[in-house]
Amino acid sequence: MYTHDSTHEGWPVLKNASGSYCYRYAPHDQWRLSDKARHDEDSANANIVAKEGPLPVGAHTWQVAVDGKWERHTLTAALVPA
Image (cartoon, rainbow, N blue to C red; front, side, top):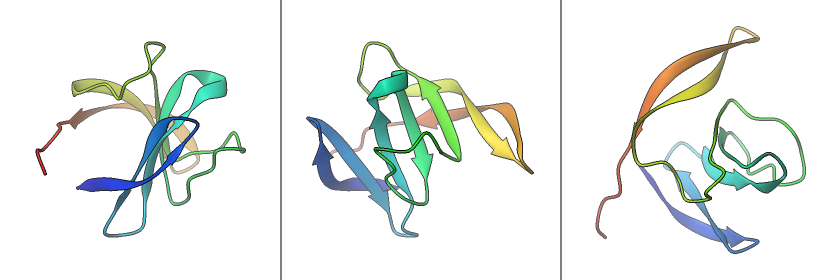
């Protein structure tokens, strides 16, 4: 579960209990999952294109780095009321 950690360029930066981040990488219209919020680096463990901006809620296909190769996997995101 990710919770709001901070804001970057008007977008929420989310963080989970393990210290991983979910954040918007504007140069590529992507949401990314990574061990760090790398707003200025083109690097992530997983990403999804989201040209409209908001985090895609529901089941969507994300690109996930597995053993150094990109694979497509379904990731389901849900918004939980605080």
